[in-house]
Length: 120
Image 1 (tube, helix red, strand yellow):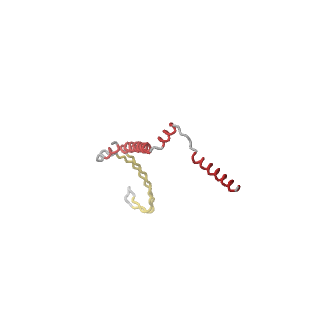
Image 2 (cartoon, rainbow, N blue to C red; image 1 turned 90 degrees about the vertical axis):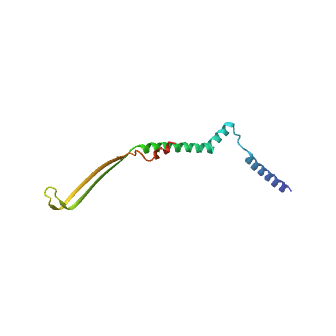
Image 3 (cartoon, rainbow, N blue to C red; image 1 turned 60 degrees about the vertical axis):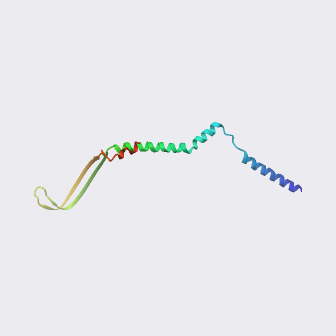
């Protein structure tokens, strides 16, 4: 009988301690509740993402209006039979080195009002 009472007492203390940890909660102040709500508000997060998207779209539309510049440089060599420009005679086993450079720029003046799609 004493053994059953001691087992029941131990179980009661264990269950009581377990329940006290479950039901012990921190008290939140109004300020903490408001900060938590603002940090976890989905609408605010969506608006922040939309703002970032709009900033990126504005940057992209500004960059689209700027001209594009491209450059190219090449060098090559060939050996074998070549034409002498002064005598117009073919010479054997001659090595010719050639090089070229180019720079281009382009600017879209009108593209069917597609540039304005980011400004709306």
